[in-house]
Image (cartoon, rainbow, N blue to C red):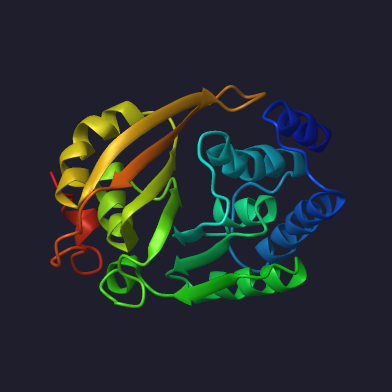
Length: 237
């Protein structure tokens, strides 16, 4: 995808960006590349690839789910994906990001200032620790995560933050069906229920993508999430 393909492809989905939003994505790319020279934010730095594999890919969640006027938490967002592209698209949402690397939080704060994003908050913490904190636990209408871990692990890191009646939106790639088969029991243990698995191909490169919609139907048992590192080492099954 060239940068010039970005707008027409979004328009095919009924999304028309303002000149301000276009400029925000332009500046986002510039800052991503600039800061990536000082710290490891992404292996993807070519402009066309950033617009396709980061910006368009992040916004693809909005093709299947309306984020408007929601309070969103992004777990392990790295360089801000998918939540900050979604924030650009939906200026009315409130976005919080939890990330375990302090340097990345520094980048995200600078980025938010440069893009003049209001209604954003950044927390330097492990998801396993923040998920036990009453300030965060079951406080968010929507929680997002993009390619952080397999579903059985990701559910334990994310579902504790979701309000009962809220939604967990996971952006996944190839192999999602296998992850669902392995992870649905874990999802249920944590209070969730898989509502939808939307599949599509990323334009140009035609790579497989999935948007998983998991509803929070009951409170997560207090023993979850387990201590840092345990969900990855001993996934629920």
